[in-house]
Length: 349
Image (cartoon, rainbow, N blue to C red; front, side):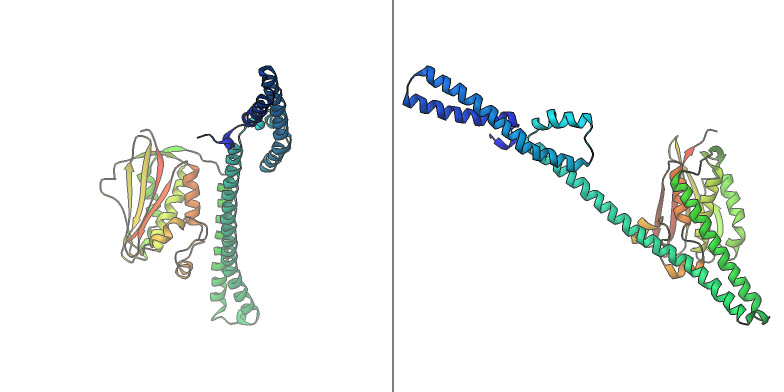
């Protein structure tokens, strides 16, 4: 079906001129009947109408369209853009211009939605950061004021208050260290020094490091049967040690007494190795899983804060894994347990 709105300015001007010329030629034929006069009137009318209509389109309508494009791109026109405005833009149909504007509007809508999400995330982050900082600061402030008000002379409480103040100062230092580390990871300042090592050996080292903490809850560390054979990986050993310490430490914190923490290692292909840390602890509901790697996100704020930690451990883990160009996932179910899995590049034996 013929649609005038899909025509370029040249075609639209030509079509309009043809209609006008045909009407004038038909009128001349009826009035005069001389074919030469009719033909001359047709040609003259067509040329005048075509160029007049084309001039009107390009200098009035497309001037407005040019302003729209300038508004869309919001930049001072370069030589390439001037060429586009003078030579390419006039050839575009109204539908093409409309599509460009719709794409621009859709892009701006997505940008606005992204800004809103980032703004909401920023507000939540600042709120959480403020709360995490205030808790140990106010605790230290309370203990020190109490000591200065006379408790310092009371031997039954002065050492207890000082120890509690020290614990909160240590927590504040850990929080600042974790924030500093996340900042370095996000800015790319922290380099990855890859080396080949056996992942089972590193797991055993981390198990030994955290064994005393695990023993207080009767939690046992094991490597899953069938996963004992040495698997070499290529990664930053100390960074992966930090990942494993965070994940295994969490399995202790949220594990049930006399429970188990199991490490599994799988050769996914010749290029990647999957490491999973599983526990049989309290677990998490499904609605929490998409957010567990966010900074300061806690599934149960009161219980998590009592257990300890800065709320940044999993965020750091995610950044370290992604700095290796790898991925990390989580599976969990309340009262069943959680499994965190991350990939690493396979090393050569």
